[in-house]
Image 1 (cartoon, rainbow, N blue to C red):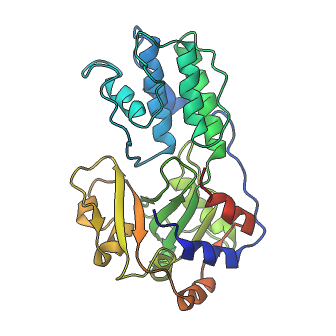
Image 2: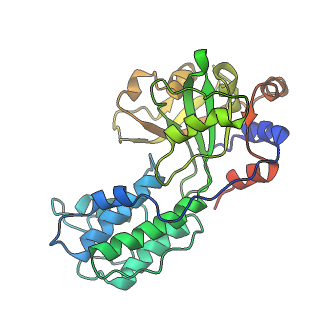
Image 3: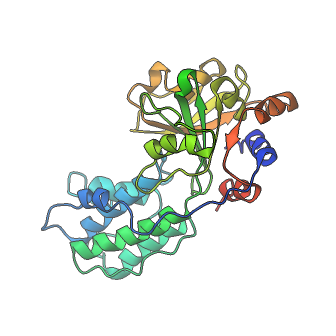
Amino acid sequence: MRRLAGLVVVLALLAGAAPWAAAADGVCEPQLRRALPLPGVSDGVVAVELLAAAVRQVEPALRPWRNPGAPIPAGERGAEAARFVASVGLLPDGWSLETHDLDAWQAMHARFAGWYRATPATVQGGNREGMLSDMVATLGAVSGALRPLVVFATGQGDEVTFFAVMWNWTPQPRLLLFEPAPGLRLGEGRGDERAEPVLAAMSGCALRFERFAYAPEDLAIGLFGQQGESIFRVVASDPPEAGLPAVFEAERLMDVFRFDDPALAGVRVLSGGVEGPSIGAGTVLRLLAVVRTNINLDGIFFHTAFP
């Protein structure tokens, strides 16, 4: 994926002295609890359902990179979750419901946390509640290790017109485009607090947005490429949409960022990358006058690093 060098240059020139903060431990307990299967299933089914739910909290629009077969036969409880976590390399080699044990459960946590160089929980297992507590703890550690960098645009009345996330600290670096919540706009005030309602509305229980840059729409798109010359290459969508084109051509780029393109009907998150000419010095100078950000120079390199 293209590394968006123009965006990094602009933010580096704007860098101030804002720190960043880690997320608190113990997140998404209600969301993970909803993923628990009904009592009476094996610990292996509970494990894959919890792990799949945790991954989806922090990795929207993730494209699988393995073809693992069917760790659990199709149609059985846990089959879809098992196939998903196996397709992204999170199941131990040779895993099955029959071989699942506490060591396998620990290995699942270690692989998931390892994506972000986080420390997994020391699992206790034992029962459904114990396994839920294990995953809440590991997801809390993962949440605190995430490094999303938000770039959003505003239009008339300070309404948010697109919301993009530079998502590098992940096993699958990509640009995430989120459909903005209807009517979402900047808050009152003059400083960084204006962005707070936007970040709060778009954050999830584990994927929390704190570091940002924003600008008027006609200039914000210039942080990613040159309008009319840059394309968007699709990686995946959430929910998955089989009919999406592999590439959105340059004339559709702005509609893709806004989620106005008809092909994105029903899609909430689109992942991929912008490809095309780098932004020129003139664009950089124009952006310096209008971009607002709360990230410092160290934070730029922190949030654009790769694991």
